[in-house]
Length: 316
Image 1 (tube, rainbow, N blue to C red):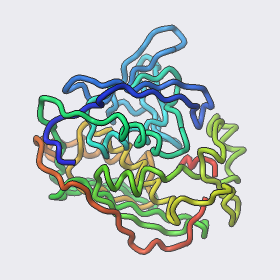
Image 2: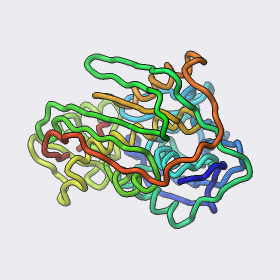
Image 3: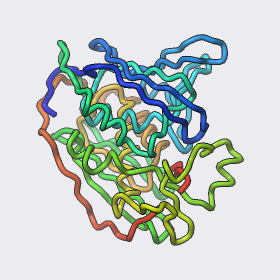
Image 4: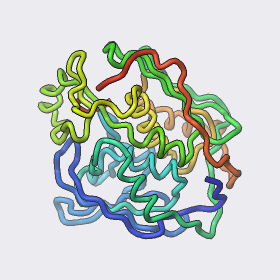
């Protein structure tokens, strides 16, 4: 996309479904919003009967275990926001109010495909004011065990380089590089589903997670088998889903990033942590207005080092 100005949705969009962790039914409505509104969640149907507004910002992240949760000091929260935010980010959508009447964004089919289809039908409109970007000026790196995540300067839009490395030989080591844009997101990232392992199911249920997971919304691994009758959508669906999560988590910067994101064995926690590190020092970044972006860039593979296959939300 080459929009130099802010954008919003052309019309409202409604979704109904259930949360992958809570299994709670939820109705979600995406409303067009005014310039400079940003992405804001309107959490309704709270226990005390009140409604709360929660900005989609890294500073409002309250949990990153198995999904990304936004919350406020009064205890209102909305979880599993990453797939929806990734779609907004890839489409260059700046201003939306997301009305949610349950504790979790609906999981749909475990990917962002439903959001892409709906936005393609409704359309995006340009608004009156220029978009602002966050330009990465200095490398920022977070390490955790053998994994790391980092943001580095990059002169041409927003690039992501994501690598995963699982003990399961059905996943193994996979790496993908993408220059983010709506076309490549729609074609190569949005349809990649969350995944997990049957062996982890009982532990997750006891902890209150994955209560709504099923073969309809999760790619399931049981030993060396993929349990989903239809199999995988991509042979490396796992790393593509990690890319999807990273795009969504990094959208919590509050404005589009101009830079390169790299991760190895990362996840929600490290995606958010690198934003915290970026904003900890004002010399790490600059706010700039509306550079032109390439219309659409592609997805590349660096060795996909294993056959792929995949259950339970990973919830990874």
